[in-house]
Image (tube, each protein chain N blue to C red):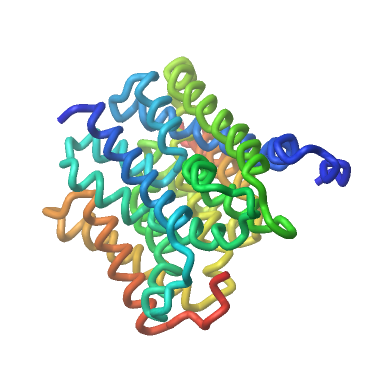
Length: 238
Length: 100
């Protein structure tokens, strides 16, 4: 990061720090746009989903549930489990806010807690301000929504070989999130493999369980086993 | 089943999960089991979402497997998310041209 950004007003500094996030989101949400249109959503619906959710895994699962005609309960539970991590991140980030972070500001900034925004905000030295968060969330949301629009609208214009290949973008990003920590921690590796095995079991054997519930059950079971067998050391989580 | 309600449920639940702890919670969770559980959840969710769905993501098992292998290798080498994501797609695209 350019050192001169430290002299920027907080809002502009947030935008500057958010640009790499926005560029990453642009290409990942392009893949989501293609996925959403393939699942039967209109371009407008796909962009709406991105603008109001701002979450990759939750949206991918949500679109799959819409395509399969799942129940609203299944949708709510799936989002709850998949996005539960944001609750933890919000909890952690709430300890780092400066004194001007009033409740209305917290209500606004809550919308923009994502893996990447959390990671960048947490890495800031000292306390963080609402204006800094506004800048980072604004530019990230623009990247995420614009990418979705381009993927949803231009996805059909692209050669099918290219749009098919772009379908991998989101899942490849998920692998990029889980593999490095799994390499460093045997416990993470064990829970990741357990979750994958559960998911395979539901997908190919216990096929009466629908997709959303299969993900919830796989995630909850393997995380619970992980918590029992490999309880995390105090202090290792922050 | 209405699309508007689906999207409202998605957005509402997602917002509440983010908002409640960020706005209301001021204390640390004490239960070591629950803290450990929450620590593992992001990894287990992403793993369960990716396997086996990634093998169907391109509509062709061969190109999907090629892309997956590239993603796993680059992720193992700690490459940035965006590099892993785009390289996997590029590899699947290239594989598509080769097998055609």
